[in-house]
Amino acid sequence: MFKASPIRPYIELLSSYLKPLRSRMWALAVLLLGAIGLQFAGPQAVRYFIDTAQTGGDLSALYAAAALFLVFNLASRALGALTTYIGNDVAWRATNSMRSDLLLHILNLDMSFHTEHTHGELVERVDGDVGLRWLLRGKGDVESSKEPFQGHHVQPPASRRSESG
Image (cartoon, rainbow, N blue to C red; front, side):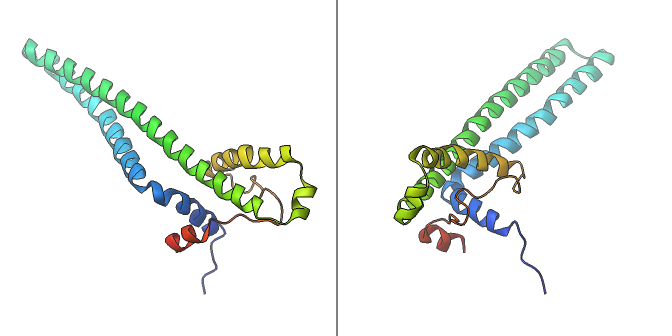
């Protein structure tokens, strides 16, 4: 009745590499939500400052609102930097794991494959293409990233496939 989604294999592949990084992904999500929340809180402090100043409120309340705005802004920037750090860490760990699996796959191919492809080509495909493919997939440009080694599709090892199924 329902046709399988063409993107499903990519989602399964992505999840097989992100599953071991689950705690980092949760931390990333919490930090990202916190940074977004602080970006919404900052203008509220400014609103309070303006409303208090227009009504002739106490000077200490104005100082508190200004300090609160600065704290929100600095905390938002700190969470943004931490989010970037953890996001890059997750990306590197996942792509290195993918590179490792791809290298293992290539090493297990028959000798005719190795005679058809130069060492430099294999290194470029394992090291360069994995990062490029990850970046392209992250931006949703799946169609422009071709399988490296046409006809030789890379799958996660059996241990990862059983975890994601």
